[in-house]
Amino acid sequence: MEAAPAPTARPRLTPAARIVAGAVLALMLATAGASPAVAQDKPPRSEKPSPKDSQKGAAKNKAKNTKKDRAGPTATAPRSTAQGVPYAQRDDAMRVADEIAEQRGLDREWVRRTLGEARLVPQIQRLMRPAPVGTPKNWRVYRSRFIDPVRVRAGVRFWQAQREWLERAEREYGVPPEMVVGIIGVETLYGQHMGSFRVIDALATLAFDFPSEHPRAMDRTAFFRGELEHFLSLHQRTGDDPLRALGSYAGAMGMPQFMPSSRVRFAVDFDGDGRIDLNRSAADVIGSVANYFRAFGWKPGMPTHYPVQFDSTKLDLEALLLPDILPTFSVAAFGARGAVLEGTANAHEGPLALVELQNGSDAPQYVAGTENFYVITRYNWSSYYAMAVIELGKAVRQALDGAAPQAVR
Image 1 (cartoon, rainbow, N blue to C red):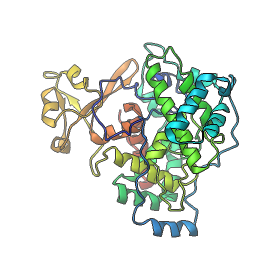
Image 2 (cartoon, one colour):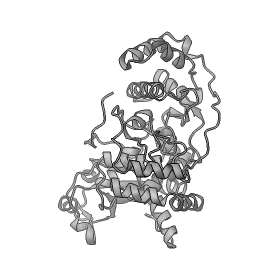
Image 3 (cartoon, helix red, strand yellow):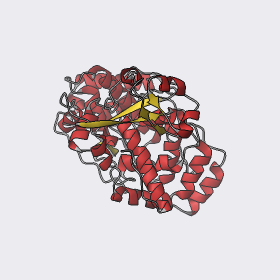
């Protein structure tokens, strides 16, 4: 798979269409089920991580003296939830194993043996099936699942324990602590819920048996085939046991829920101990999330969004929503179509997008999203997800400062 460049224009998608299974978010919004982290959809990437920073030596010495940055539970022994035939008995899977070994220069027998240990998991297929047509989306319900006292308190503890690493990440990558804290909190509640599926089972199931009724089944099959390739290549290179890796039903791993390709391209050894550990090293997680944001064009100091009102005499809502969440309009063009900004927002330099947050049968809410809002959606392709990350990070910061959090309502 080719490496993903900085964000580029994409065709219009519905707000719920950016999680791995497209419509899975809609089902989640209706049922308040699993976190979106487990269905995370990241574009295929194949580049290696960025070079280590110039302060690595100092960080390494510090890491040797203390391991207080280690956080999150140790992964439990993997258990197979599979019920299907082992992929060792599937000719198509073994052909793919041979192709991966040849393309990646991997040991053929190791790849065949490893992939042959994977099993089809029917539960994963069920979770990936499209939501029923017409399933309503509801921002208030979605928000309530992530901005709650338990998650905010956990975020405060995480921030306090990892303050030095968060501040260093902001210095080196330009990403503020509340964005990193928001991502990790929404994804895994700071390492408390990192997934219990064997990653090899999840990726094999989705690479060879993705639900055929899904409207993007061919694209998704190709995506997960690429992720399976990255996963096998990564584990042969590191020497880690690929059969012990646990993650979400989409194959996302660790506290930041990186897909294998994102692990290859964006993960960094931020604590300088000589290895990348996204399960237990909070430092590596913080640096990797910040690196991901920078790679997709995070602009230090730029707000993520602004409040917006409508001038009914000029409003062209259809035109404003046409580009979806891709920032497209200048402030002047925004206003010409009836979207009214206030105060400092009118001095914003750069394109804006009108972001719609539906509320079931109630009226939607709208904000003006900036390029930084769009960067958050590159982590998980959903405006609901991005707003939850923003508001959780803000709530945690306000709790640290002793102020009551304010919501987008």
